Amino acid sequence: MDNNNKIITVHEQWRLILGDEISLIEPNDYVKLGVIISNPGLTDIEKNGSIAELLPYIRQKVKMWGVGVLRAENIKVLINKEVSKENITDDSESDSEDDFEDEELQRKNQLSRFDCIASLLSSAECIVVQDIFQTLSQFPITFPLITPKLNEEKEFNVMLPLYTGPIIKWEPSPGLIIENRLFSDPFKLIVAIRIGKNSTGKSTILNRLMTPDFMFSSKCDPRANFGVPYMVSGSVEFTWLTQETCKMDLWNEVFKDYYQKEKKEIFL
Image (cartoon, rainbow, N blue to C red):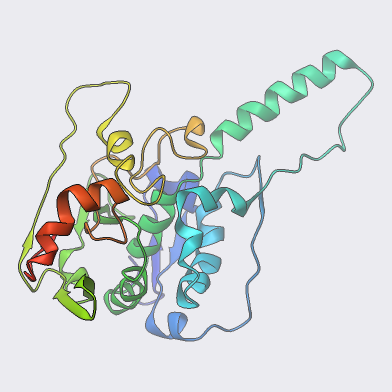
């Protein structure tokens, strides 16, 4: 990273989605909204630096509590699916070749929730990450606990120190609110480990238990047919298990009784 110009030189493995370099998000950048940014509306065939183009818009949405933009099912609305017809001819064979080429280009435009949120958090200064996480923690989504460094190959950041402190609340009984300061107060950790190469992975199974349909990154995500997220390898996602994140059966059968005991420990 260039500390003088506040520019992160992106490692070649991430350049398809971020370009050659990306600006470090400093507190002033995050505090000031500036000009209202509209949805960039990437076309299906745009791929190089696609997430870098989206980050200012996503950052703005998060600051304005529009965190829903980071749900997997909403990522697809950031792409304009209209196909240009400038090169259409009467030659059906030519059309077929063009369609095949367009399809191949589309498959290279892989835009995933995980890549968006990992890039956002990895390109921000520590205090900005904490501000962003304070907002994100109010919504039922997953967070990358381990993220890749943008300027280094096979190097990762553990986000735990930056996630410590936000208050997670639940209501064990009417009128009684329990608060847990994340990673400061006691917690219990449930870990799912990937084993083998089954066609149905752990994330797909876990998502059947969570309130959002695509909470953890999985092969069932919208646009997952374009490939796995670039940054998911070696990364770790987590969330807390409360009434806001658990589906009704999981909550009623497992966690409701536990939290009704008025313990302050939270399950992650």
